[in-house]
Length: 193
Image (cartoon, rainbow, N blue to C red; front, side, top):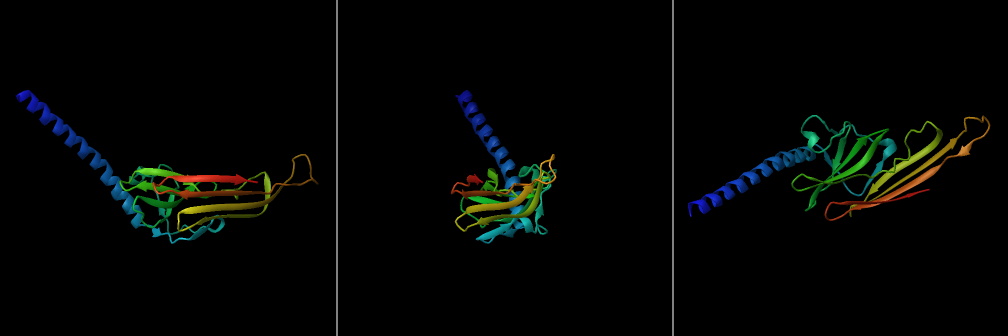
C-alpha cells in the first residue's frame, strides 16, 4: 500500500512540476507579446498600405538578441501595427527587411505561440539591376473581414547587353489575395502576368 501511495504521490508531483514548467515558458512569451502590442498602434480597417510610401518611423523595431527573439529571429523586423483583438488570436502587421520592408502578417494564439507568418505583398517593385523601371505601383488592401488583396504593376524596359538600339518591354503585374481564418491561419492565392 505504501508503494502505491508513493507512486501516486510521485505522479502528482511530476505532473505539477511539468505544468509549472510549461507555465513559466508561456507566461514570459505572452507577457512580452502584450508588451509589443502595447507599443504599437491599432490598425484601423479597412487599410491601404502603399509599399512605395511606407512610413515606419513609429514602428517597434524587433531586437533578435533580446526577448523579441521569442517572436522574430531576423534582424530588421519592424512591427508597425497590431490588429483589433480577436477572441482566438493576436495579429501583428510588420515589415520584414529585404530589398525593402516586405509587408507581413503574423498571428499568435492567446498563449503567445506562433500560428502563421506570411508576407502579403507582391514585392514587384523591388530594385532590379537588369531592367530600367519607368514606374511601379505596389499596394496591399486589408478589409475588416480580415481578407486582403495585394496588387503591383511594374512598367519597365530591358536592353540586351549586345544591343544599344533595342529595348524590350519588361513590364509585369502581380496579384495576391488571402484571408486570415477563424483559427489564425493565413491562406494566400497569387496570380502573375
